[in-house]
Amino acid sequence: MKKHVVLCFAAALCSLFLSFSTKRGGDSFAIFLNGKQVLQQFVYADKSAKTLSLGPLRDNDKIEVQYSHCGRPGKDRVITITDEKNNLLKKLEFGDGENGSSRMVFYRRDITAKSGTFKLFYTAKELPEGRILATIVSTEGKVVAKL
Image (cartoon, rainbow, N blue to C red):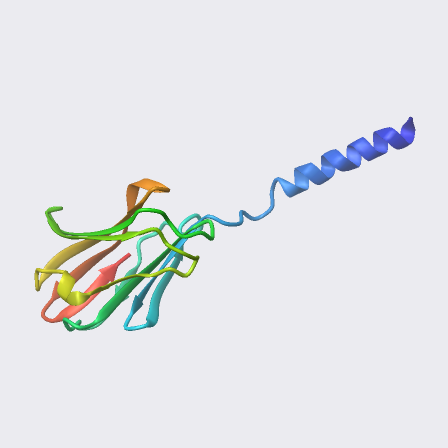
């Protein structure tokens, strides 16, 4: 009987300690400029806004977004680019990601306005309410992304 109580106590204690373990998984995304990763953010761990200086962008500069839902790509993925007043500038549909490294690719020329503030939104079947990934501020030929 005593051995049974000790085992139950040990199991309860283990459950208690494991309940405080570090959270694993969750959504994450990365943004690439011309193949170079310029940002990686784990959504569950870091919800703070960041500023990322991308320097002046040219029309042919390639921007890639990789969004992972707990290690899996999204379904019915969409990147929406709006101006500072939330007027639609471009809606880019990417469909279903095939693997965890599926990137959504677009170019600076896809952002029709040449200056001002642009917002980069991501939506998917797994995230229908969407998430703002970056606010890009363009001033005097310099582009700064606030993430």
